[in-house]
Length: 400
Image (tube, rainbow, N blue to C red; front, side):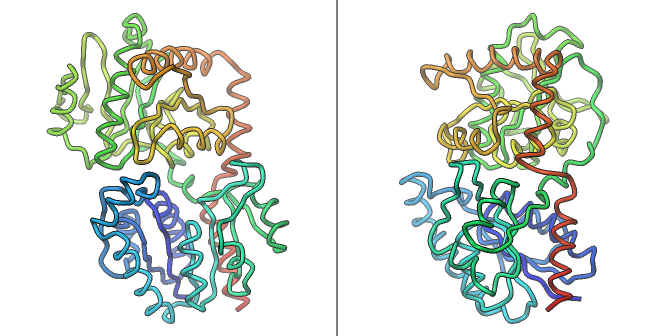
């Protein structure tokens, strides 16, 4: 079978690349990965070998969003690191039968320079943002090249738009990052209503986001916290251990209670409880009636599983007010954000009030549930995107 290189440039892109890589490996291909940003942990967890040594930077690859972030990247050497990764790609590209791009203009341009056959999954671009996608230069010219054997989009609207713009077939078969949430890791106990908290995964933004989420829970009336009436679950990555979580929570009046055995730890404050679900993202996502979210890919997965999402914009570098507004355009009307005059306590109160309203609607409003199902198909597509994309790529290789 063929030797394939996965080329991605972001944490969410690495996740999609790893899931696609697993599907390609299952079909007998030899797969390696070259992440341009970050350590590429999803590839390592999927047992996909990495090309060269990787590094993590404090901006998480999102420094371009602010002047301070750009300056930080320059000081930390991220630009030089990226150039070294691209040089490694050019030196090693001849070893592979096909380069598979997961990302945006940078890996697309890099793959074009390799003079190798390319398949690309444009996970970072969507026509839902503006109605007509404006590809940055020179992305469009690269995608029209004969070197690009297949172009996959992240939604049906983008496939139609780009097929017309590029004068070639752009295919939509679903999104590989949805394949990782097909089943829960554990079943959560019954609750009349269940609220899931998704603070993201990048540190130190994760800590800042978590404090804001705790502030929202502080504002939910205590009468809502009756046993069995409302359960709140926090999906937390292992990077934030119990000790730093304890210190963080304690600084805002919450205490961390560690349980023995299989019971999760929980955060407590004045009669309020939050169950801490480590390695339990799927369970929180699938078991919740509403997701209070400060994340990128996680919000997309929630919408793809027909769940309503409530945003809480933070200070970034990723989940800012601007990012949240763009996310609403991308994911549609089942993503909500409270209107508030400022970013302080009034926003937390408004978000808490809207959370209570949406929890009630998620259980009792059939129109909202129908809208969630419709948006799931329109914005993210059917399940099994990774295997369908792998089938398409394998078909390309058989023809070459």
